[in-house]
Image (tube, rainbow, N blue to C red):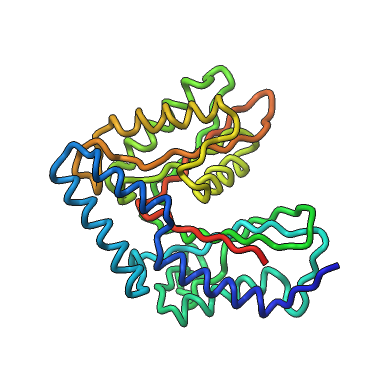
Length: 280
């Protein structure tokens, strides 16, 4: 049985918080550059230039890509042959968030109660999703989620008879309603199946996948391509300025569901789609 001290986890998480907020991922950077080359609107090309320059400045000066440094969301795969000593793993992750957001001068956006709304002043608690796997390692995926995009996400409990057309219509309608608010060009995560909560979790997790990858199932890989094409025909464009680049990617994750249900969740992310992965 392998032991990992909780302080090591906290240190790694703290660094992840800073790095994810200040350094755009290569797949997103390359997608923005490619979109700049294919965008048909001159105004939107200028917007993309600004987004690319903003990411370059953030990388060079190690300052946040966006002032909304998000609520800290984690997907954690824990090997069954690992023991975390000292604090619990949850405590360690929250300690890392507190350190990272404080020492990294990242905006603290979490309120302790959704109604009374008193700021916790350290961006904790984090949202943590656990999965237990074989092995002796811990894989941590961090995805800071700003609420300009989170607020435009949606979930619908479709009837099985709605079928794939119902899924497509709901995804497209959700993006259309979102408009310029999520800071497009956006990345769209889609979760299909499971229960209400599982579909939402799938959609969020889909946003942590490299947008150059495709769903392993060719049927859903083709659906990703079809949805991306339809979304880019909406004409919302970068920052809502119109054009041919409304989304950089669409990622779909699926899960078995009940015979009477067809849950679908759409989780929208901004053009930065920040995330970082570390394996301990």
